[in-house]
Length: 191
Image 1 (cartoon, rainbow, N blue to C red):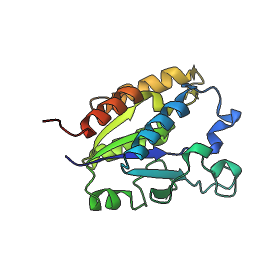
Image 2 (image 1 turned 90 degrees about the horizontal axis):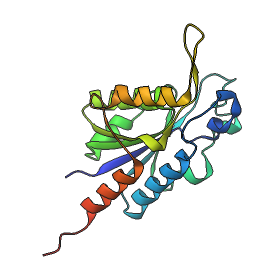
Image 3 (image 1 turned 60 degrees about the vertical axis):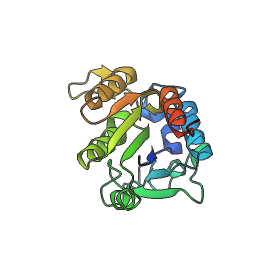
């Protein structure tokens, strides 16, 4: 069985800004950190993806304070760090090459935002042949205005985004069940 790689998408300070609007999953960072710690304790593979907007006005531009990682989510020296400029972590990066070289076939993808970079990266990962799991409580998004001006709550946007991924591009799970099932798989057999 190949190892599962944990992919952290855009755990950056910019997503703490109020300008994005109302957010769902207020405990998302706690759940994500639990998963990250579980992976690190087992020395399982971790990849950090950081968004670097080409728009100088964006809070995700490299000159902005929002570009920096959230404190508990900084990559460790032995963890892969990828910088992306678009929604998908696979476009114009070496992510696919790295994953294939290391023979990772399964990915757990978490981070910001469910309906943008998570969804885009998950769909592309699935199309590239990876088995993908998304912990629903370790991703988050913001309320969204539709083309006609109607407002959709962050909970609705999150739920529909995950519903569109589930069983088509990924398996949706909770962080707790994902971590407990992975830890059970890693325990040595007793004879």
